[in-house]
Image (tube, rainbow, N blue to C red; front, side, top):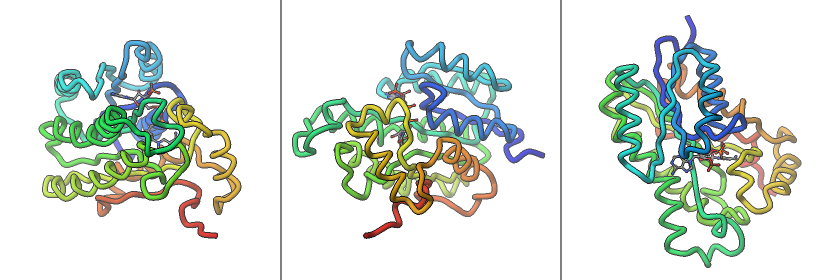
Length: 255
Ligand code: 0WD
């Protein structure tokens, strides 16, 4: 029997085939999971449809977390199709481009609010909306980054949002443990995706991290996907509230 046979998932954050969310979905599908996918904007629908169409019994629904009614409709669609939910991959983030370059001190109130709302609050928002469907326990996995705990040039307000995301992971884990729902974050090393390209200087960051990490390379989206699979599966039944680094060891290095 495969690890996720009979398991139903909701995957938020597939933008294209390079998305970390898609790597997570592929790993889970290979172990028997069936999944619903959300797309944030109409321009992404075709790509998400195409990718999801390669998987068994998938569902594709719109959802922009800044519009609560679209999330509610997505959860309802999952309920109609599958009747239940066992896991969630939360892999979304956003900050206005101008907030991801220059000095953090110049972050506007609007940029701060938007980054925190979409990149951090949405985890709590999605967990709460999905809770009634997670009747048999479950696992929620979100994506964080090293910029949550150390200053990374140009990451700016997204670093603050990731700190809030990791903290939210712990508070949610404490709340939802009684329902046998585990909540964990993966702190992924830099990967060249659509979102990553929005951070100024991403190319040189990849080179820097690749040279200095213990494994002397950058992590791949598939490696992050495999860790998500582990966290979702019963192999991780004793792990909750954790932030697991999947970064080729970069974060352990001092001088
Ligand atoms: O180096 C990297 N790529 C890392 C990414 C290192 C460590 C962590 N992460 C995180 C990101 O911060 C994010 O939380 O992983 C997550 C996924 O990022 P990704 O796979 O690198 O990026 P991408 O393929 O662009 O997917 C993120 C998607 C958005 O794509 P675009 O590029 O169109 O913004 O998040 C979705 C959207 O599909 N998204 C939303 N979904 C629902 N509602 C919203 C929203 N309001 N905003 C963005």
